[in-house]
Structures are given as structure tokens and as C-alpha cells.
Length: 120
Image 1: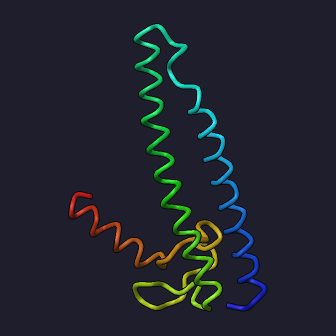
Image 2 (image 1 turned 180 degrees about the vertical axis):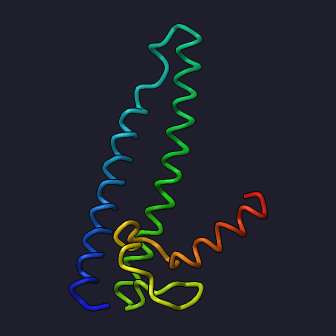
């Protein structure tokens, strides 16, 4: 991949990383309130349910941040845009949609098919 395109994808990845970090920071500050001001058990249950959802979202974002870091590292190493399964190039259209992608669309479909068969 030429240096101009690599710089474009690096910029996309860094912007995505900044958005995720900013969202995590906002979520952390929203969690600080706690349930001490809630007296109604239904309100407390709702808040706890929302907290569980927020924690699951933060976990997904944490995993995405790891993928972004890995993609940035691949840019530095010169292996960005190469499918980890087949070694072919990942299409630019796919990288535009998911710049942290590690598999070409064909290998990703195969992976999803195998996960479905295993019941994941």
C-alpha cells in the first residue's frame, strides 16, 4: 500500500481511537453518580440494568481499542492491509468501513460461517 493511503488509514484509526477514549471517559463520569440518591427499588433495578449494559459496551470498546492499536502497529511494521488468514490484500473499501480489519471479506465470511456452525 502506498504511503499516502497508509497515512489516510492511520488518520482514520487515530480518530476512531480518540472517539472511543472520549466516550469511555464520558461513561466513566456518568457512572460516578451511583444509586445513593435513588429510593425506589424499581429505579435502582433500572440503573443496575443500565450499568450492566454500559459495562458490556465498555468491554466491546476495550477490545476494539486493542484492534486499533494492532492495526496502528501493523502500519508501522509495513504489514497493514494484509489478510492474516490468506495473506492476500484486504480491499480498500473494507478498510474504509473497518480500518482495524485483519481479514479480507472472503476470510471474514468463512470465519463467521465457522462460528455459526460452532454456535458462537
